[in-house]
Amino acid sequence: MEEINIKTLLPVGEKLKPLLSKSCISEADLKGILAERGVFIGDNSKQMSIPLLTLSIISPKEFEKLQEFQKTKEDSVKFRTSKIESSTTENLNDIVPLSLIEPQKIVDDSSNYTVNTDMQFTMNSENNLVLEYEILREDITKDWANCESKFSGRVEIVKDEKTREITFRNEFTSSETEAINRKVVKDVVKLLKDKGAVATSDNATELSAKEFSNNQRFMFMLSIANNSPNGFLEFEAVKNIEIGPDRESKQPLPDSAKWMNGSVKNIIINSEKGETLENVEYISDPSYHDVLILRQVQAQYRFEFGEMNGFCIIEYGFPHYFRKYVKGDAFESRLANIYFGKTSKSQNVKNATRLILEEFEKLYQTQYHLCLKR
Picture 1 (cartoon, rainbow, N blue to C red):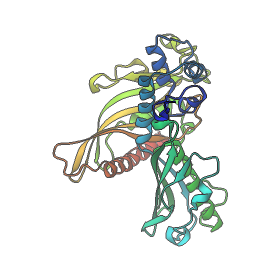
Picture 2: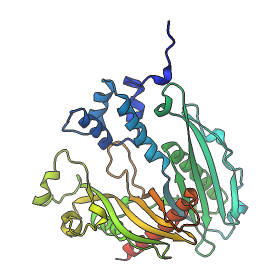
Picture 3: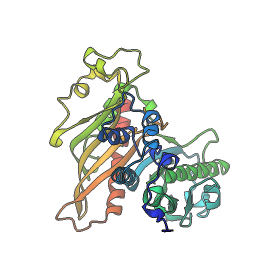
Picture 4: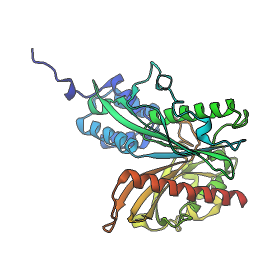
């Protein structure tokens, strides 16, 4: 009997379901695959689309698309910050042991990944600690029968000696590294409480969508389409904006937006050839801002850090705020693309990504505080 090469088999049925259910595979992605088959459904939710795909056989081309959807979204670094007030002048390195995090407590028996590196903090300074790590995850998008993918994560803890504010900067590339980062922050905060360095009633807080009214969220998100305080990032253009109707708003949608009622959950408004969106009625007319939720913005910035320069595309906002299958309201930024200039002396993507996202953090934090004062 001829031996079957399992590496050439495509996942079907229940084998395919875990991939389709991933948060990085959107409803729009699945809708596009079905539409190419000539299948159109009124409800684009995953509850409807996943059964249609798992009960049929996907083609190699469709599977490649699913692979690319996941790879593109998981390879890019996502960035979040959280903060907590310290009640002591003690330095972080005097409180937090470098060996605080134990890998065996991070990974449980049900996890589909293993930690590929140690989980030791390194000390950049007495008030700056960094934990970088890598995981190996079983991944059917490469070889559904037996495969592994690598993902990295990073948690940087910085204490401001003047304000005593402690900031956690979280970088992650997959849902697994996002979960690990949350565990790391939780363990550090618990230690700080046990040591009396922060109040027992306090927790590390993220910038949340719920802090804003719909109108304030529009103001905040659009104000980030701006130059950074230090001038290292120069705003060039908004590429697209994602909005959707607020189902909980007591105000009715204006007549010109009534078409959003029913099954419409979100729409993406594209800016042709980098032009501004000032002429888009839903953006320029404030009367829409109370009844619409602005979920995400994609903007282009030119960057220059010493002899490193070019331009980049940053996606930012509250990517899970009105998603049905992923709950979360934290502000998140992601470097979607980076292009180095011809005169750039350095083209280190990893270093550039970190510099850009850290500078972008200063930009949105500045605009956040300005927005609160209005």
